[in-house]
Amino acid sequence: MRIGIEASRANRPVKTGVEWYAWHVMNEMTALPEAARHEFVLYTQESLKWPPKYLWTQIRLSLEMLRKPPDVLFVPAHVLPRFAPKKSVVTIHDVGFRRFPELYKKIQVAYHEWSTKDIVKKNARIITVSEFCKREIVELYGANPENIYVTHLGFDHERYQPQVKKAGEKPYILFVGRIDKKKNLLTLVRAFERVANAFPELELRLAGTFSGPGGLATTGSDELQRVIHESKFVSRIKLLGYVNEEEKPALLSNALMYVQPSLYEGFGLPPLEAMACGTPTICANSTSLPEIIGDGNGLFFDPLSVDELAGCITQLASSEELRQTYIQKGLVWSKRYDWKTTASQTLKILETW
Image 1 (spheres, rainbow, N blue to C red):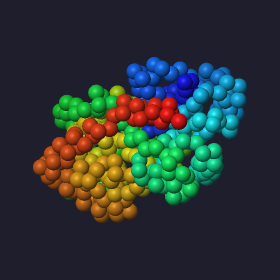
Image 2 (tube, rainbow, N blue to C red; image 1 turned 135 degrees about the horizontal axis):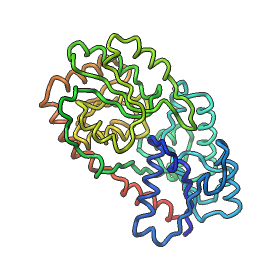
Image 3 (cartoon, rainbow, N blue to C red; image 1 turned 45 degrees about the horizontal axis):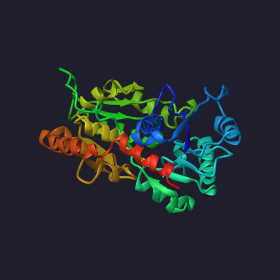
């Protein structure tokens, strides 16, 4: 079988969640022993000579599908080309733009709305990353649930494991991810301000880029930076910028705790990476996070409640015994997620029709 993979996301030099998913699944899948019976063709803007910044999928990739279509096309990031093979598989990572359109730029909402409806209309197979997301796609877009397959994300367990603690490091709360409005970081900043006096050494560190897909600035970035700048604890709130994969394990391992305050998550990989690095986690009790983190493996809070989050932070900062309980649970739970499993499940979806 000739399997085509849209690989432009995997080739981006700065990667966040979707790009890393594309990169890992592509590499792990083609390395599987059972993959040897297939031919893989990777489509990128470079390989198909498409220098323009926009319309790569809808124009250049579409033309290639007309000229020389593969037996199966796999698109790991939400948008099918205009002319797609009958056997097409596309990953929809979440549909938060439908639930919370105010958290996205209008052009992003319009594009994702159109592309999701197009996927459902074409009756393509859909891969999504959680049972929560599957329910959302069925409920909001009327997709056939028999066409939707759930493959959880994974991570590199050789990379993400407890690192040696840095001597003299100040305790800090950590968040890693794209800095945008749906991550609900204003609630995290406000909760930090509530506990800052009680824990005078504690810092808040936010690691991530203010740039979204296609280089667009993320929503809410100006407001967040203003609130941080105006905070009386501004010297203890650090914006670290983009952190690469080599730096992340040490950053996670040295954190006193990891917080994922998101209003909407299709999956939520960073808290699992934190758990694998021996760091206890606090997560919003919303969307996919309870499913992915698992009951009893971390602390949960209402993402709209600053007080609840401040209370969770206080619990972990005050009790080493409680921290150790969640550290041990997290180390065990996080082992169930790995990219080889994701890739193996994905290949079966591509090759079984």
